[in-house]
Length: 378
Image (cartoon, rainbow, N blue to C red):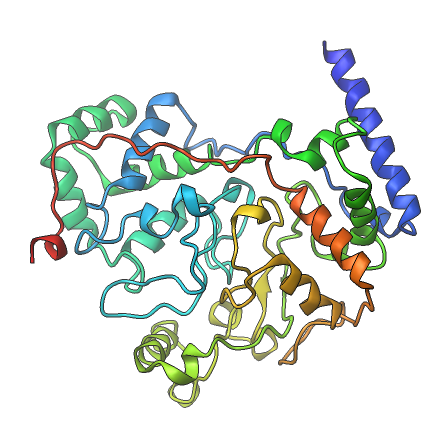
């Protein structure tokens, strides 16, 4: 069986190599596309079935937010591609977010989380979301106490972590373990089947799109490797979301966020757009830069870009065909592509082939006890 699997992988690699030759060999410069490996598991947070089951409950549990209205799943719904389906994330009541709610599909493979890459693990991402003032706005002591009042959770935390009482740090570790199960299944992804040797897995249109992806369109320069992302940061000139000019609450929240991240007053008072990586580095050369997202599961994760401004893959391809937009620090990698209408169609067809045949959906778990958030009682 192992020998047969090796032959299958070699056949797939040969097929991709031939496609790269047809594309002008540009794909040879970058990490090869291919099926995702087993998700990396940190040694200090090994996955177990019991931990994953606990993490799934906590992912759905509205007790892990300030007023009970913002559990993880409120912004990452399985039926909406594990995002929220809107341009801009809803934000905690009384605030207005300014970014698209990224899908958590395949987040197990990222070494930088959030659009500006501000954390480097799922274990660190969970508290940033649950406790972030514009996200969950939960007080960790209060959230922990809510869990401690439930005998079912007390027993589960004791079994999984060996602790006498639930602890928020362990809750975040359980959520991270669960999120590492929200990954693409290579057997259901047409491109992955093709890469593993099934020459019929891609249509002729999709094969032409793959050649464009690795050649004329040069998508491979940023979207490479099994994740179809090099996880680097680039400015591409995505237009500002109208919210910055038209929505007072959005402006207030955004400028408050600039202030919280240590941006000088002269900058945050006049802020008109999202600065991206600059929040993390404070380097003006990083204004407008965003982490390259994975292109996997695009069929189910619209809208696109950090502010959800592009609604369809056709719009995304048109945007890059024009060489991106205007803005500071724009990457020189982007140039007008001059794709024909037929080539655009082929490229979109290939991008769709990076998604599973059916969306990945998890059933809602049964949660311990009964909990009515404050907002529902009013």
